[in-house]
Each structure stands twice: as C-alpha cells, then as structure tokens.
Amino acid sequence: MNIVLFSQDELSKPLPPRDERTVHIRKVLHKSVGDSFEAGIIDGQAGQAVITADTEEGISFRFTPQSDGKPLFPVTLIVGFPRPIQLKRLFRDVAGLGVQSVWLCGTELGEKSYMDSNIVEKGAARAALIDGTAQAKSTHVPELRLFPSVKACLAVLADESGAAFKSTGSGDIRVMLDNVKPDGSLFSCMQTKLAEAKSPHVYASIGSERGWTDNERDQFKAAGFASCSMGSRVLRTETAATVAATIILQSMEVL
Image (cartoon, rainbow, N blue to C red; front, side):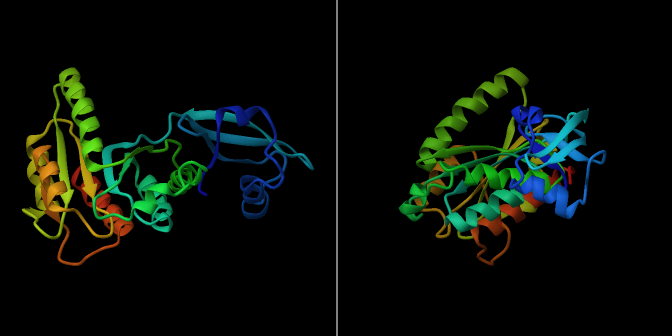
C-alpha cells in the first residue's frame, strides 16, 4: 500500500479501527496525530493527509489534494474469464500497470462455472483493482466490464470504437494473443501498428486457460484483430495478461 486511498464520502469521518488502512497507518507507517502520509481519492486527486485525531473510534484526518493523480493508459484488455483465484492476481497486476479497462468475457472453451463466481458481485474484483492501484501509488482504478461471450464483447466494441473514431478521427490497435495460429510476435505487431496509428487506443485479447476456438478467432479477425504470440510457451491467463500489457505499454513508451 504505497498510497492510502479513500472514497469521497470517507473524507468526512474517521477510519474505523479495524479497517486495514487504519492498521497500515498505525502499524506499518507508524503515524500518529500531526503526522502526514500520502493519500488519494479513488478515481480522483492525490495528495497528503494529516492525522487530526487517533482514538478508539479510529483515525481522523485532513486531506489536501496536490495533483490529479497518475492517468491511466489507453489500453483495454479483453480477457477470457479465468479461475477466480487467478482473476484476483490479474486485477492487481494490470491495475498496477495502469491499463484503462478490463473486459471479462465468457469463452467457448472456458469453464462456465467461473462466470457464476461472486467475485464481482461481492466486491472482491473492485477491491483487487484498488489494491493494485494503491501499490502503484495511483488513484485511478481501471474500469471493469463483463460480457457473456466474445460476440457480445465485440458488438460493444464496434459501437463504442465507431463513435470514438467519428469524434476524434483516430483509430485503434487491435491484437489477439494466440500461440496456435499467430501471424507474428506481439512486439513486432505493436511496432508496425504504432508507426501507422494516431494516438491509438489498444485493445488486446487474452484467452482463458484453453485458449480460443476457431470460431472466436474468426470473430476477432473480422473485428480487425491481428493474431500475435509471445513465444511458444503456454502461459497462465493472468501471466499472459500481465506480460502482454507490459509489452504493449513499453511499445507505447509509457512505461
């Protein structure tokens, strides 16, 4: 926790004594009344907080904003729904890297029961994204969306990217990670496409643990996705997502 994050409505009341942030401030940062620590508003400004009281009711503080926080990068990861335990790690890592959004979708080869996981409904997904954001000393949390299938996901992409193109005149870059039928490496693909694109938003799709079907490959291809690989090794979904995001962000020269 390299920055302590709060929601807007938490600024006006003490942090409860058992809240993990209270424990972190007291036991890890060793802060007391009058001391300051780095803090920020979730999806808002970053700055400094000064402890004004530390009682049995918790820690009260005064927050002073100093910046708008670190911006997210124009990258959307389209991820085939993995095992819930992998999903938490994936959320933390890609939030730490600063991708703008994560779109989870059901896949034809993916385990259908994973889609029924309560990780999203009970807030664990959001909590993992916030953890990754705090680790990166940032305040802006990636957006999370869920889709039942690749087809549904690509339909939304077609609508939204078309509107964005009309308003800005810039295109986007679309890559599909696939070690079965790749046309080239992710790195070389990014270099080529970045030389052609103007202020692009990158959409990168990563399959679930069994990968994509030929039908899904055809859907991505029809939607303008280039098939790319990161080598011959088969990676876990969360590992592939983190590595792909890193390669993309380095290619964009933002890391």
